[in-house]
Image 1 (cartoon, rainbow, N blue to C red):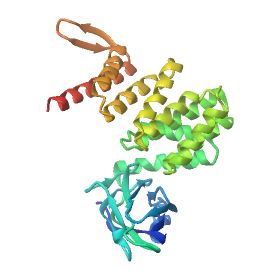
Image 2: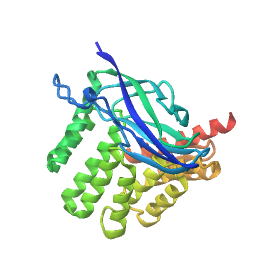
Image 3: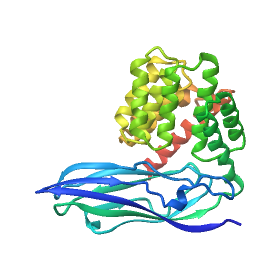
Image 4: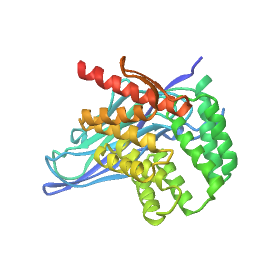
Length: 345
């Protein structure tokens, strides 16, 4: 039976004004002390993590509104139903927060807390961001995620061979959380390191992945750009460009920039393992920009790339007889069907 308890995170929101200007600082991620320690009973780390610990909005005009996205991520093996997210405190009226209702964070999940600062007066402004949540201790399949975090620990200790095996074992357990994609990327990276060796480019890319996992998106982007600019002949350039484009699309909603970076992968690295993924990502980004026809064109080209048999009379297609083609054929076909359904409705 699941053991469920209720907890709360309180994050300080501090603001300061001078004349008609206002300086605001957001201090987030102060998990209650009892929640930041390890549970002595089973050694699992409690896993709610905020992406920002000290954020400053800078000087803002009274009457203006400045947004900031904060990530709340589950990096543990437990499940966290989010009961409420509220602004409280002395100057609560200066802040708003928007978040999807009824969210439950499974291991590896992440949600956005869209905090906006709209000062209504001068001087220092202080409020709190209160997150009320419950804890359902991990049982059964949730405990699979412990292997992922154990792999991270082994990797951080520098044993890449053992870490790769632990990631492999974790994937074989059949995880369905967001950590599955992270583990696949890490396993591929560590396997490539066995072939190409470990240099500064490898460490930069691994650092970028870890920074993103930990919620430091800016740090991850900086590390990827450093890799691209300083190690242009690295075997990891296609990896770095794809990941940078992925971050632009998923984390920063910069779809135009994501499309440009994915196009670099398609044009410059036609033999890359990221070729199909880059095409697929372009289709998603174009759709987000409202370019429906372009999105359909990309998904159609991806499907055609992996089509082995077609009957033109009946407009029927089957994928090539290999695992990769079956995956990408199905994914592209699903997106085309989804777009068609949405357009009809």
